[in-house]
Length: 261
Ligand SMILES: N[C@@H](CCC(=O)N[C@@H](CS)C(=O)NCC(=O)O)C(=O)O
Image 1 (cartoon, protein in one colour):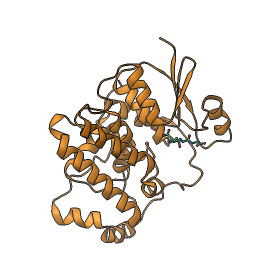
Image 2 (cartoon, rainbow, N blue to C red):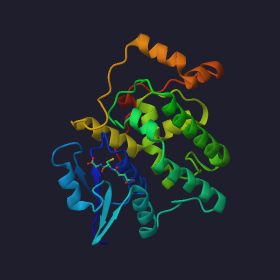
Image 3 (cartoon, helix red, strand yellow):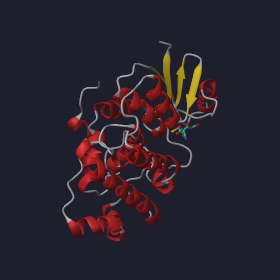
C-alpha cells in the first residue's frame, strides 16, 4: 500500500483535523501523522508545504493529496473499503449527508463563541442568543437522528459513520463548555467523549503547549454571579431546569481516561 499520512493542526485547536483523524482511527486504518502547530509565525508556510488549500487537514496517499475533512473521510471510506461511511438506506443516507454538510457549512456563532479547545477543563461559558440558537438546532438534529435510528446503534444514524466524525468536535465543545443537555443529546456527547480515540486526542492535547491567537481570546474565568445571571437569561438552561434534572456532565476528563487505542 502507498504511504498514508494525515497532516493535522494542533490537537488543542484543530477541530477540522479531528474529523478525518477520528474516522481513520475508528476504522483502525494505519497512517502516519504530521502535526503542524497552529498560530505560529511558521504555520502558514508549513501548511503550504503539504496542503494546496493552505488548510489542514490534508491526507497524503502516495502521490495524491486530498484536502477538506469531508472529502478525506469519503476518500478513505472508498479507497480502503471502510464500512458504513453513510447509511445504505437512501432516506437515511440523505439525512446523514444533509446534517453533516449543514454542520460543515454552518454554526458559525457556536464555533466563534465556543472555540474548540480539546484540553479545556469542562466549565460553562456565557454565549449569545445566536450561539444558543445554533445549539438548539444541533440538539434537534441529534434528537431526530437518535429517534429515527437509535435502535440500530449508539451513533447518530445507528452505526458509526462520517456524520459522527463531522459532529464529534461539536460534541467535544458541548463537553468542555458544559452545555446543559439532557436525553439523547447528553448520551451522544458521552458516547463521543468516551470513544478511546477521542480520549487519546484529548490526552495528546493536554501535552501540547499551543498559543491561542487570532480571533479567539483565551477563555476567561467567569465569576459565579455573572454565570448565574447569564444562565437566568439562557433559554436552554431555563428549559432544562423546567423539564427534568440534567445529568451532570463528567467534570474531570482524566477520571475516566481510557488507554489509547
Ligand atoms: N473546510 C476545511 C476547514 C479547514 C480549516 O479551516 N483548518 C484550519 C485549522 S482547524 C486551518 O488550517 N487553519 C489555517 C491556519 O490556522 O493558518 C475542512 O473541512 O477541512
